[in-house]
Amino acid sequence: MRSDAVTRSDAIREAVDAARWAPSVHNTQPWSFAVAGEEISVRADSDRRLRVSDPAGRQMLISGGASLFTLRTMVRCKGYEPEVLVLPDPDRPALLAIVRVGGRVTPDEYVLRLGGEIRVRRTHRAGFTTLPVPGRTIEALVQQAGAEGALLTPVEHPRAIEVLSALTTAAQALQSVDRRFTLELVRWAAPPGSPRGDGVPAGGYPDTPPRTEPAFAQRDYGGAHGWGAPTDQRMSTSPGVVALLTTSGDSRREWVAAGQALQRVLLHASGYGISAAFHTQALELPPMRELLRTELCAGRFPQMIMRLGITFDDGAGTRRALPEVLEVRDQGL
Image 1: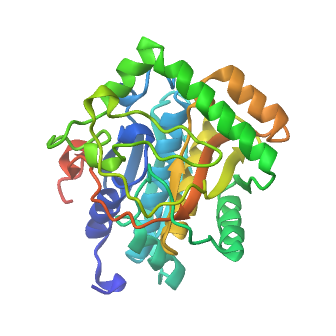
Image 2: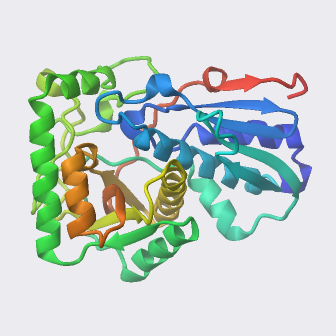
């Protein structure tokens, strides 16, 4: 359907439907949407916040920011200009943004390409192939993050990569012996055949944790159950391109900006067949996060540690149904 043939109501519904496919920590999908007239409210769902690993709601707002960018992108794909107010009401902290469907625009090829990756992009939890990520593509990803007010820094020095590996491994070990973290992880690990539309499905990670050199510990969603997809033997031991996403500040506004930057980077990368694996364990332990800020991030605040690489991952995603996340206040929609 041509963009100029899409009604505002259709554009709103399709934008919210697309926003469900944003990435979120443990696939918690900590967001909801309300539509009134031509305005869409993007709200954080604090009931889905990780109480143990995310007490301040930082990861929740990063997830919400990713959803906001997805929604913005789809509104533009459908031929309308999104007019966005981020954190518009201090008295309503759960209200992350209001997006108004503005005047008609002609979406350019780049926006349409990003929109086409929304349902294709997948979080990767295994190894990468030996195929290299082109340097010019990494440079483009840095530019995409900058366009949303964040800094994406590829980590090139081998010693710095080893530090990130060691901190990730240490954080994973500490969390694995802490019953609070373990129970929280179990809550979001879906067993094989589960019909639930959230959490990490058993086919969303390998049955044997991938080994990279240096090693980057993965979450143990399967625990002692032996859940997980068969390990792909085509994957190499390379960690891929290790990168840090940082912001100059650490307020709620920067967290939302980090989420928008993250999703912009991920959608651009997906268009080139590049996937991302996330390692947030060290960022969930304040002393380790502070160490990273001062020693590796030049005083900037680390919001995400990721590895980028090329995979053969084509698994299906899992999301809650649209009626579960959408409140319609305008019956004309």
